[in-house]
Length: 340
Image 1 (cartoon, rainbow, N blue to C red):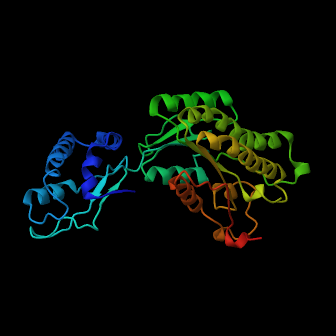
Image 2 (spheres, rainbow, N blue to C red):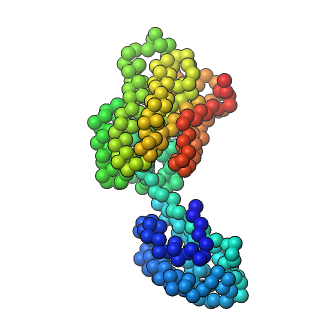
Image 3 (cartoon, rainbow, N blue to C red):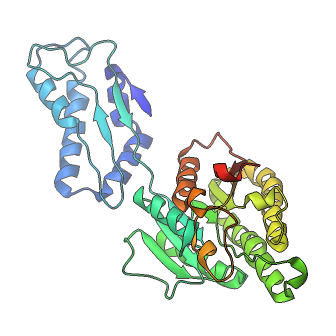
């Protein structure tokens, strides 16, 4: 949040960088709105040369301040600019005292976010949560039937993608960058799971788990890094598991894949940080997802007491909304019935 006093407001209005940023966000507004804001800018540049901070009876100034205080929210984009600060009242009231300040809240930046495994479970919840905040979310999943779904909100775009295929990943990321703009956030969520004694697990199933959970994460990061490095910014969030911090019987291959995700995060975060790219790893415990309601895989306890995908999606949004000078390296979440 950026604050300026009234005496600095002229500088605010003529500051090239800030004005260009405001104009960028105003591109969604109607022509009348843009004309009004432009006229207000011109008026203030002249009037602020004539009035002081303690002005109490300037009708025109009161009028202009009242008009300037506005709120815009574009439903789909969720971008807004707010100017506040004048004291409400009749003409004899001071518009701004020495302790009053103008408050300029920067517009919530529209972000392009890629979520793998976005068709269901945690990926679906993350996709919806971020889309609700006005972000453009690209849901990548092998379960998507097509590369789009008219039933989804306009800021959710689906791509059918197998994360074990590097060539397809490169094609999809290139398409997003070309047609929609920079990928600012990558969330590696795609994963598969088997509950079985390791000596009974066939080789294809072991390979599938390592390929999707670990190699898929590596491949997606490898594809997006050149784009992020060219801009000097970006954020990558890997979804690991508590199975990546402790061994769990009958999910040996899954544990190996999730330990690997944590290891790649520990190493790669150090490589990427000098390039302005932050890497976070989230390790959730059990969540009530379709995983526990398919075939012979049953949660060994009361499924009603575990976390929901929405709980973890809220954490993902929290991380994304933080300033870039804070790095949440590894975050571990247990449902209380699993604390051990």
